[in-house]
Length: 148
Length: 86
Image 1: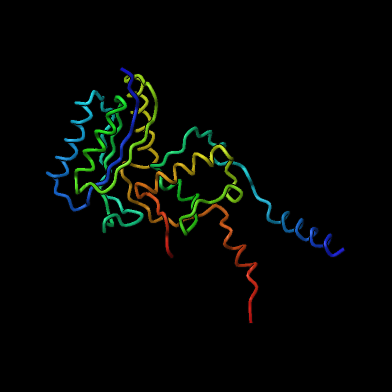
Image 2 (image 1 turned 180 degrees about the vertical axis):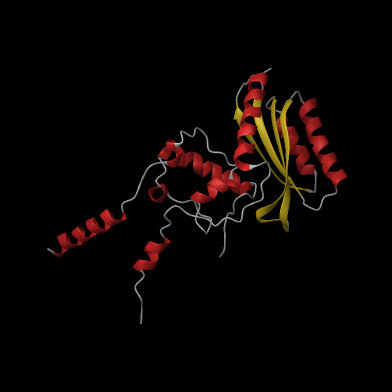
């Protein structure tokens, strides 16, 4: 059977009890396993500040799945994620078509290592100032003629 | 006459403002831009949250396409704002 590589990020409410979080995680992992998928990576990135409020939540708890699965699986996964009221956001991205599981697994593990080296697992340090490369705001200011 | 003066002035200004226009992604030989890296992506959005045009950032066309996609994905999972108010 032709299988593709996908990754899914899902965000749950930050005030979830651990047991409930675990139930959701295990349920989704189970869906991958039962749907003919091979889970490559499961990561918990922990609580992060959301860039904008989602259903009045300012924070979210991020989980990350990477798997090789037949094309129907993401639909089934998303159907189940829609059923969870406490799951506030998800996104699935296809990474590769018709991939070999073992090759994908080694590549995924390597990529994860590189990412952790670069970013940390769920690093929260977002307090750095935004340095836009040569933002043209200064130009605009200069061109504004003062009115009297 | 005055017109040529104007273009001269513009030329001078352009020369003064000239800066490096090299694609930072080409320089690092990046093949795909990771939407899960908000720290990187934030360098290519304005304070308002808009995607910086490549004429400003100097990113090449190919990487700008990937960058725009990554920023849009980053917005969806709330790593990046759709709109930031200051």
